[in-house]
Length: 600
Image: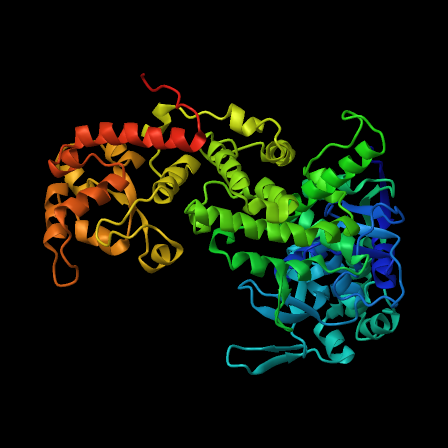
């Protein structure tokens, strides 16, 4: 990646003229202007004292591979067909503030210290500006749109609504800083000899520093690649807000008259639902982000490029790699996006359908959101073939190895690029993916699973529901309807209160080994009682719950791989050891390989 930078200095007046003419514009991925009144006045004061206010960074236009939709700086109204020579990558807040206050000729829409929208005109108090004992920031003031100052009762105190009143009050309009101010100044000087001297001092103290002010500019050449623009923007942008590939592609595609943001978010005005809305209708996809979607599209696009190059005679090592790293997403063309987006959307929907078969119903319970990316990409390619039992079985084996191997916790982009083609090859009869062959689960890890922060913890919870765990009270297995209607969640088997009273350590009783999926009302019935007591209550029933036959209740407990005798006798140690072994057997069954660290 070769990026050229050239430092320069440009007169502030010329910079503002470029903004007005449309020669300097913003790439559309830039956020909006957000500076408030205090920031603007402080910036103006700094320039009046020739203080440095930081360099701005620009990117020369003209690179056919880096096309962004552009927009003028807020407040600027350049000619309709104006084409920018440069894009402003860093310095938007400063340049917009200066342009609006000095060169726009319009009242500035900004905010006060309480973040309330206000409109302001900016002035310099001449008397304060030339007084060495007054802080320069105090000399820069702003007035409301009508240029009237009022007291707390709303009564007008001072009127500055005409040039005559401005001069009488000694307030010089900042909007005249680079304009025709001689008439204004001449009438101010004629007010008295004192005013004449004061103007002379003001001109030297404020006007000349503004007129001589040079803005440091770091200019990036038009040979700068798109990924470098993105990286540089993130590193130098003074707003400190990371730029996403989605925003960059939105600006790139907009240059070809395609609205990526609208395609993703939809258009509320017309009632059109976007891709996000359609995916989020499936609760398990509720956290899918635009970058996840673009990564899946990029996997398909880079695979298509690779296949085309292989068919053209390139070797495996010569052909482009399947990848979805940031730089690959940024190279995605509009044509490629449009070719694959619909299939990828369907791939995510098929992923949601598969996850429901594995008893994962909400985004909260999903072990890894990131594992959706290669899954959706693979299902997009497989299409209807994904419905076959052979594909579903292999997909489940790959999925559970990823979950219990905890392989999607880091370096996910590299794993995406391996799993996607390897999954497709496996479905075609070739070797299993590395994720399946490399994943392992250590028995000791089960003891450490205590919270939803762990993917494996969520995996145990889902695995119990997948394998038929029935609710203690209703005897119903977890289905979509039961999950939501009964508010199924993971709860303690030996209640926390009981464990505390019997001296069982929190790190032990809080383990997933002592937890299982139960309905909210069932957990309320359990309360803090000993298992023997709450099981007796369930068998007896009450006004809200019919009695449960003891034999049937034992069958239900066994669906949770619970040692019935140990639970009924309140033998926590025997229960814990037996269930630990049973859960490890379940995990081994899902991964289709032995668990590490289990004694033969």
